[in-house]
Every structure is written in structure tokens, then in C-alpha cells.
Image (cartoon, rainbow, N blue to C red; front, side, top):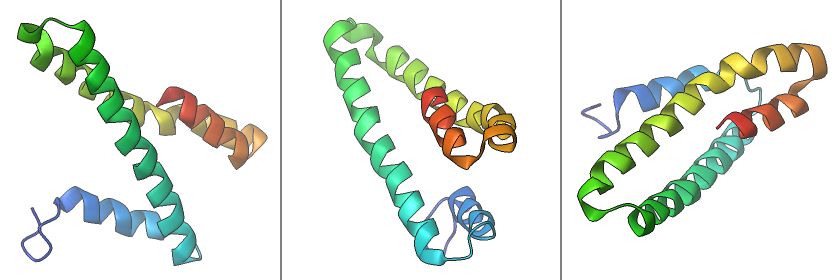
Amino acid sequence: MNERTDQPQGMSSTAVVSLAGFENVAVFVDIFALIEAVQSAVFPVGSMLIAEHVQPSRNVLANSIYATAVDVGQGMAPLATQGVIVQYGIEYGFVVSAAVC
């Protein structure tokens, strides 16, 4: 944890590295907010579906597998999209990234 901001260290590092790719800080903030808004809506819905369809004794395991799958998808997205972005452009890269995550 970052003692000054109480944020995870990786979160602030990711933000700083990502800022290098954008000329306009407002664009970065908007894109980051959109990504987080989607994730904050999708994860609770998935957890609610797990709670409805999985036995209560297996909820923790099912939620852990679900969270791991989301993290793996986010890790695979850059690998899956780099070739698409080079070949077809950034617009199609966003489509592939959304499909992977």
C-alpha cells in the first residue's frame, strides 16, 4: 500500500505508465473511468449469478474462480490485441479487448 494515498502501489504505477501513452490527461481519465465503470458493473452481476446458481457452501470457491478468470482475461487482452492493433487499427483492438475480458 502507498502510505500517502492508501492506494495499492500497483494502481498508482499503472496510472503513471498509462499516462505516458496519452497526450491529453482528460482522455486518459475518461478511458480509465469507462474501463472501471464497466468492470464495477459486470463483477457484481456475476457474483449475484453465482450466489443464485451455486450451493452456498461453494460460493467462496466459485467467486474465487470467477475473479481469477476476470484477472486472466485482463492479462490476456494486451497479448491478444497487439497484433490486431498493428494490423487493423486501435478501434478493432478495443473490440478484441472487450471480447477477451
